[in-house]
Image 1 (spheres, helix red, strand yellow):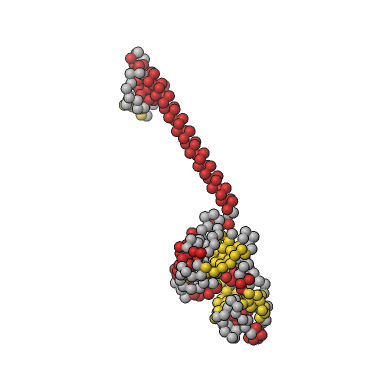
Image 2 (cartoon, helix red, strand yellow):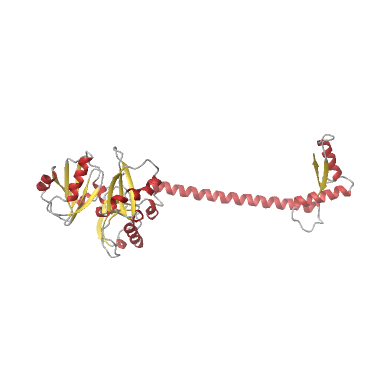
Length: 362
């Protein structure tokens, strides 16, 4: 199941603040809907946040073609002059690149997003993604959308870029500016649909159409539109430093849960076999050491302490050979004879013998 939480634009999220939410089944159908404090929401493995458009700012930038990690580092500085904010105070995430080479960048206040996630975490909620509410209306072709509430509203263009505004009788200035910018990009819409929220009435659409120079038409209710799924290319704000908060241990990079469980099972089995093999080798080593000690004691029963059977065996064998009048491998004459056979006459300048070892110097 999936739980979708609609986040308010307030600075602080009080524990008893009622938040609107939707609970979806595996097929995307709405099972339940409600508005309760976070601690009283139904539990779900997949939790996504819908951020208000008034909290997310958008910019179109031409970014260099570098890796994602470098882009994340550059974005706060790339939008600094447009937002008049310090780079360390903002969290910016890049979306897809358009045919014109522009990248849509979503920006949110870092402290606000951090406080929101901390408040939800105290209620036992770990969201996996967070996207702006405008993404629910993205993907049009020459038609824009406006969601109008009793006091506020927001405009959404084809790419999901949103701009929030206060409601008034005339066409909002934010919409006028957005239309002018679209005209400069040769992307002016052919139609703007106006949807209502919380029972708000429609504006004078004829008047807005006249002021904008393009038709505004009546749309649907936001409460119905809010039940559709996010497009796959919607910008997820839980990236970078916020990705570790996103509770993606079982779904990182879109890996199915079954695949993660299978990988975990394989890892456990591998560790089990490794432990068994380590125990087997250790037991074999102990068995061989015990057998070697038994052979040494059988050969030299008078030995009291056994520290290194191989070394002690070699030394005792040398003593036995010398006691029987035979030369040992570490005897000087034996080693000198070997050296004489290996080095032609006249090639050796010096011969040294120390600690049972002969060294030849040329």
